[in-house]
Image 1 (cartoon, rainbow, N blue to C red):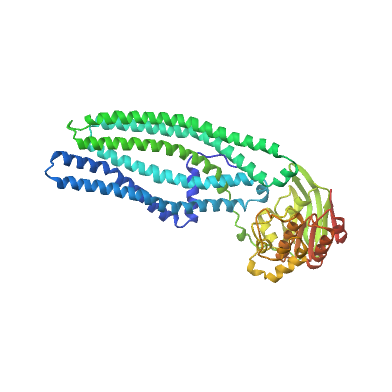
Image 2 (cartoon, rainbow, N blue to C red; image 1 turned 120 degrees about the vertical axis):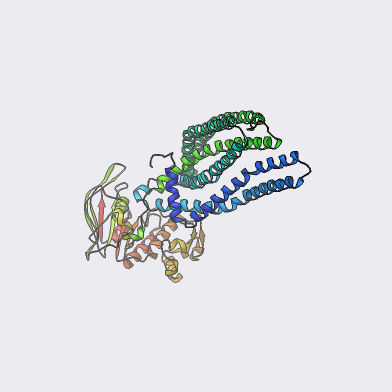
Length: 555
């Protein structure tokens, strides 16, 4: 992941992504920003109307029309400001929901198209945690910068203009200096909070990664009686988060408390001095009410400013973590040019191929041709690189040296999607997606293209009708992502069925019979051998090896 950035460059980049992908964002953003600005202007002139109403009441009680006019203006401005404050969230929420979805979609689009070698290193829990925080951080920064700090600046300007017309230079300059000092303190506190939040987010990301990882190991946890061990580990992760939260809250709380104390002192001093603030030293009751009102309003906004700036730094840290994914190039899979294939008698050709795993060379100088219209078995002891070789042939991984050709076309990670257009694959670790059995079989295929009769024939071939889960013959049977109720063999058969549904002339299977009984394994391999022109199978099974036309032994 890239080095964390604490400037606004991450936000500016994300803003550009949202603007480009979310067409309604910019008009909505401008409208909501103007609405927030209007609320600030209307709210900021309320003390002025209160001043004029007070002066009209105390100056000449016989002429009540002027008094009531200013009271009406005061009431109208206050009401409009409050109504707008309450409904502005409706409009901002509508825009921000789209922003959140756009950022999440953009990051996911990049993660799912990363090179396989990078995807293999990802921790699902950590990535999910970072994406969720980053998408929320973008919307929060938008709120703070444009819909909190910007309106506060408007209120400052309106208030200072009003105070400038009603107070002497000494009062105004002194008050301005106090505002600047308190603002500088707010910024300083916010900057110092960066490291605290960086440590907090790291602890939270580690915790989330651990939780998701262990949720995939519940069965192994039971089999190994690892409750006590896991309890100790999760307690360690939670302690890290607790300490980070307590530490950051304590330090920031103390600084904000001191900030509040300083703000209260400024409020008290300038409220008391407001009786001497009039230019002509003839301050009226209305002037006092207005000056005290503006002093109170501005000092209150300073408190809001301090909190907003601190949380702004927090959100910038969260967004910077996610921007590392957002800045990764997105692979335009559909834009990859079709392969120019030669009319060769082989499907794959390996020329002096070397493959490394974990810094160790597991395949050395391998040359071999997988012939067209043949059933080839790849065998070898565990750890000899059988699955890695399969991934390299599919363009998912890159050999450290040598060359692999697919019908005469050089194989690389850039063209992997085009190779998959020709090859159906059933991996060793069969995954079940959340959805119906039909959706599982048609994963990656338009369901409408495959009639139910065709899918039902696949189920009968895979012998689902004779399993304990006879209901699986119903294509609408629903599974969660865990595939609850499915055995390892049933999961494997779904993976084989998914490969069959793609109707390719070339099929690669990784240990397809490892979880199957002998009868089902023989029947399925026999069918595949007779119906799939070119079949490549990774297998330890002697029975499967005995059915092969050719055998490639690794090791």
